[in-house]
Image 1 (cartoon, rainbow, N blue to C red):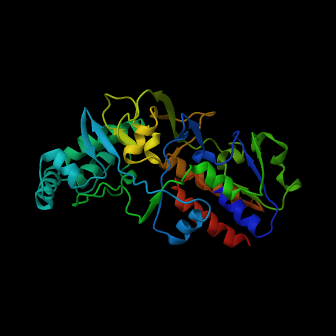
Image 2 (cartoon, one colour):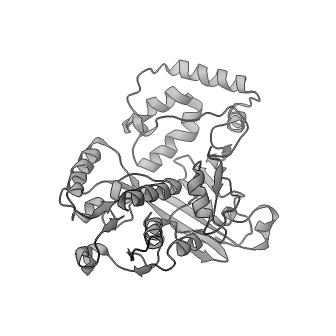
Image 3 (cartoon, helix red, strand yellow):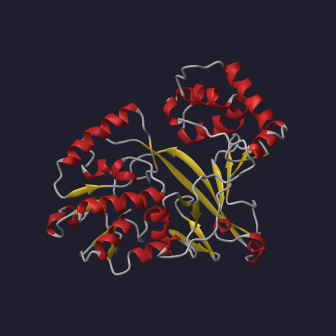
Length: 359
């Protein structure tokens, strides 16, 4: 978001200074080249959107490839296609027609008989029935959130799309892909001509008194950190990665494989080359790079990933937002500043909208 906003301001003739805590720009979309493969250091990032303006905007800097997100789920050695579609239902029950699949799901929903779900477990059971819930949702979700599904609020799962067609494309958006050459090329193009300083911790730098340097601050860090946690810490879930080089051309045959059982401690395995290399081309490189992802509770000093939208945090966020409204000249925007999960395309759109209000 910061790179897009800086680009728009720079194009309008404004002087911009971008400060980044890490040694590089781009935030969580930064990639590292390992064995000739662009490795997503902070988890898989797949650009997808139905917004033609956003799609044309990013493709104006670097063309995107044809990557289509079609993840797999491994439950105790059995492989299932995601999202839930006719391939999944065939793998689960051996059915071949949409009517057969519908009948099984409706019967399982009827058997659980839940009308007013009180928690995530009851919500999921009422939507998809027991078989899909037990194999593909329950233990995976518990690994993600570190709590039993029966203790998680129902609103975390508002809906679970069931597709009665043979379609493994995870997203419905018509535009989807990865920048050719990687996300670093996109970020570098956005920030071309913009002054950037890396390795700067805003909270503990002279720039904390930003009014000495600028007339406006576009803040994308954590909102509670901006206020020195004066009201307490907002809670997050974080992700750690174990990345390794495998001495094989093709480790798992797919970019993303979720592991939905507690028997496996990580939530998914990413094989990075499949984001940018297709078909027989994967064998041109005799090695591959894979990352295991582990979800844990966030603690100060760790990287925050997913906001925990419980009542306690929502109330605390509202108090911080009230403080934010009193900060003249400061725009709080982005995942950390808004305590809100953003995909990449909505991030670009949000930066465009905010720039339109600042001009």
